[in-house]
Image (cartoon, rainbow, N blue to C red; front, top):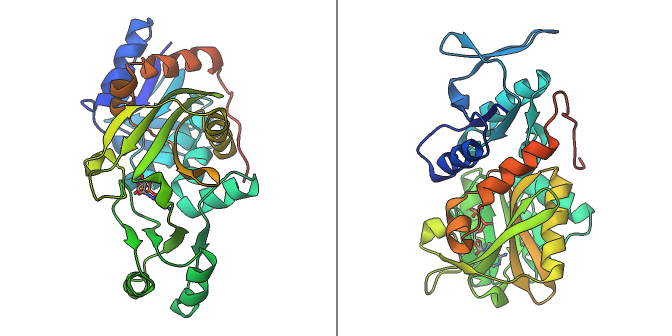
Length: 301
Ligand code: ADP
């Protein structure tokens, strides 16, 4: 097969591993920089071009779209879909999961465990918002943040109010969440391919840090997850409509709660922590499922 990886950088670990895993299984694995793609959006014969050449003969794509260029990236994925090319994660599913608030609302509708989360527009509602997430300490999150940036712990009511006031003043959208203290600064990344968790790791934040992001100095280790965690992760990916997803969970007193469902989960942390060939499993999934014109909107809402 000819499986294109949409990635802005060939040298990234995840991109390199997907190329390697695909070639090992006998596929042609071009890397296409989606930012350099341009599109002819015409009925009957939509096309995608790079550097003056038209892209042809692609059987499937693996989108690796960074959060900062979601809008353009998903437009390119959609254009491939219009051409009948199979995408392992569809554009609608990527868009759903990228919008943190929409994603939580969709998960809540399906009864998936979540930290109690509040969202408001007016600073006048801060008091009530803090009350229904259980009062301080609370976690305040910018909707646009990634890799732990813009995730703040408001330890006291006063501190939380100040942060909310500051974010509101900057006209930033944010949500307020129950602080899952018992997670102890650790979260669980479940790597889902199809309807299985194929690998899982625990990420522990540095001493004194409640955020476990590896980019913030968190450390990854192997973990055995419970059947409930496994099914929560698989169901979350399904609600988003993602075939490949990184589902981040916290272990709370009221069971596993989902923080985020990532549509371009990194392979370096998970492959190194588990020594599993996750890239190979993604390729295998594509071999089984990719068919021309087999794009349909999955997930819910
Ligand atoms: P980002 O998408 O920027 O990584 P997250 O929502 O995943 O933001 O939060 C970053 C980290 O902060 C998480 O990995 C987790 O360790 C911690 N965290 C986030 N929300 C909570 C919460 N409600 N309770 C406890 N810890 C949290």
